[in-house]
Amino acid sequence: MTRGEGDEIHYGEVYHYQARHLTRGDKLTPEAETANFWARLDHERFLTRQTRLKGESNADTLSPLQVLSITDNTIPSLLPSVFQSPILITRLRFSGGREKALQVRFNAIPYSETLCWRPTVKPRPIITGTLTARITSAKDNDIYAHQNEDGFYWVKFDADRDEKPLGYESMPVRLAKPYAGDTYGMHFPLIQGTEVAIAFHEGDPDRPYIAHALHDSRHPDHVTDRNNTRNVIRTPANNKLRMEDKRGQEHIKLSTEYGGKSQLNLGHIVDANRDKRGEGFELRTDSWGAIRAGKGLFISADNQAKAGGEVLAMKEAQSQLTAALIEMQTLTQSAEHASALASNIQQQQESLEKKLIQLKKSVLLATAPDGIALTSGDNLQLSAEENLTLTANQQVDIGAFKKFTLAAGEMMSFFSRMGAKIFAKTGDIEIQAQDGRLSTWSTQDSVISSGKKMVLSAQEELLLSCGSGYIRIKDGDVEIGGPGKLLIKNNGIQKLGPQSVESAMKSFSPEEFSEWFVIKNPLSGEPIANQRYQITLPSGEIIKGISDSEGKTTRINSNAINDILIKLLPYGEGE
Image (cartoon, rainbow, N blue to C red; front, side, top):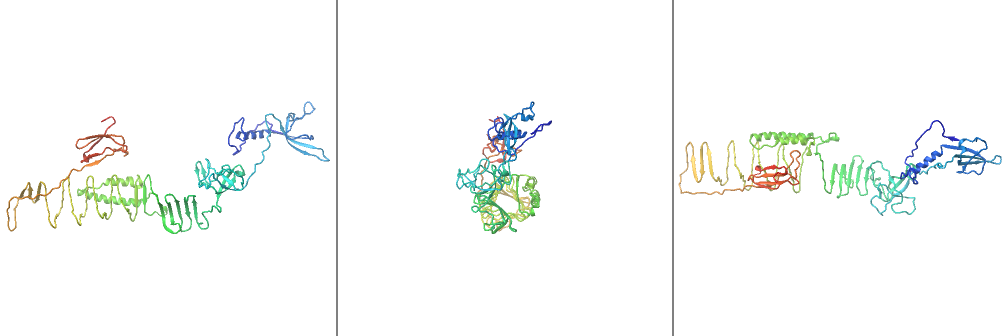
């Protein structure tokens, strides 16, 4: 007799990892094959083994699972207390012979109306190794993976000869992967017909999984003895990552077939025949392309051997930009000394220090030690919302085979420290001040000459002066005066009657502009939509309105842009 009796009561916990159940089930009345159902069976199995009884008898009528009551004739009974109550026989062993009487040994437990005896669980069958199978799909010649909502696959075992619904020949099976997590990992979908090896978790036939996929004669390997130096990841649609390990020809290729072909090639670049077509890197596509960098973009042809420097190392570019700024400062000082319009050096310096260096702002900086060329088969446009600066340490050449135009909304200034030349091989040269004065000045000789005729004309008055002497032509009169003598050297003077020469004078209509204004936040620079405003024109006309979604006002027509007054109105004013 073995029974758990004693002064101390020991408690323990039994935990079965990954029990085979799908639902928890009710705790008191669980349905079959639920978690609580299996837990109750295990609990009963442990309880029925708390007290184990053994005995011997010569009764040949004993049988397993028989409830046996044992009595003796002594009062009080000499039987152990557990044998004084009914017992349940769980095991019998018979022995005997010609020289030995029948002997029956039995194992038993105390009988209970509320506790059912549970036999020892037999070991589950174990499958070692793997079984071959094929990925299936509900559609014939399916070019995509057939999976359930959890990413599991259906397979058909090669040894399975039963007829089953197409694509559902098995329960859904998991795919083992080298890397997996919560909605992340590595997963290359398996297509119908792919051969797979099915393994079983802990050898359990009820817990199969796809251990790996295999190439076969119908699905040959893409890496063979013909390209055994290449490491290739390729999908059924020919999306490809290829890494070549052949010494002296190492390269990486990332490619997709969409849009003709889009590729990133690094290292030793080859064509489809493995003939070299370049080296370095190539990013190409037969479709559209875009390069975006929200915090700034640095493009450089300066060498950085073995990637040994910082990503934004721009010492060479910074040196060139600083030298250009110093040169512009020198020219600006000379221009200011000559009363010419000076360059905006302050803006250039702020752009260099606060934007370009280390890409402090969202700018694009391109640099090359031996030159940069931009060319276009059609138009090439350079545009800036604020300033556009061109500098060169030696020479700036601008040429146009047909026409060359320069236009400025306010002023235009040309300054040179060593001279200036304007030539026209054929055609006229016209210089006009349509609404202002035209002045020329020279500290030395001024020469105006013509190969044919020279005409000097003025609509109101023409005055020639030198050394306090003068000739004034006004209102048809010619006046000659001076503090000295008037010398006339010729063969004679002929006096005729009155005569006049009329010169055609140009007239210019006032220039008008037609533009809209953009109202912006002075701090953020963002356009302000739905802002009430009042515009006062030089003529005194007042225009009121509300800015649109882009901060634009209504279009304004005027001939004096500098004399326009714009006032922002609070809501309620001017309505």
